[in-house]
Length: 317
Image 1: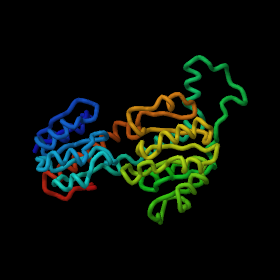
Image 2: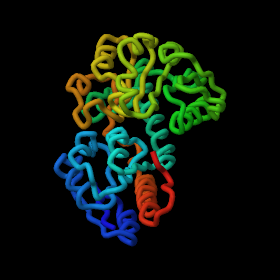
Image 3: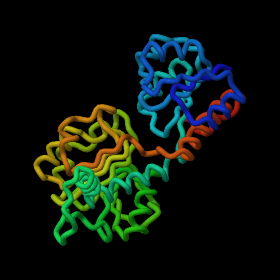
Image 4: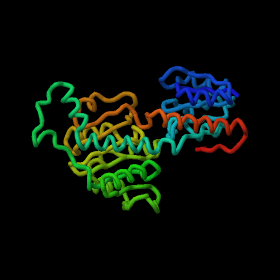
């Protein structure tokens, strides 16, 4: 079988794939073009795509009888793939849950600390040579210990963030989830609406899946419910949080700060966001550790191997 890997992956993953498939490696780091996606569906048996490879309904409509029968997605999020359209032409889709949980939760805590303690702003001050020495009222931020964490989406990643915040910083946890959560892994209170969580929390973290159902889930109304000293963190998908509403809330002082690892029109980051001191901006580092990316890649390839061998797919979506 022919397998296309759409972005450079760690050597260990490529070696694992080459032991089972005739592997084609796309060396570009940018998302696939529509022409590349149409070609991939036509000449490969399995494609291993990732974030930004927009396998839309339109792409599948142009290739109604694809040779490809599996998109083994590299990543837990798969909102860049129209799964219904894929299914309609006989293409199955898998993802890599579990492998990304702890790494993404770690980045959420990184952003929480950086935003609350103004770490990015402080580093810029030092690098620019503007620091004039310590004094008691310099760059006062928010102390995280004992504060209230609000989690929007109490799935694997949401629970991992809650554990770190509760056991590491003694934070109380409130959360919103579309379905009841019997065990959040920590003492936590499930509230009935997103605005209720936003109003109760000192720090809000968005941890829901991407897709049409969560597009602009957090907008002006939700941000208006937050306390003026509160911060919001997004490690989910960029378009879950309205960037226009966030910029307005940060510029007006409606909220104190934000930390972003994802963006609505990634990799484009609005000039207005980059100009603000009270927002931390990371370049989508959520799973950016070698062992994590290897684990994701091995899981994606293992799904492809199961398909090759006619076994049940380990991680179907």
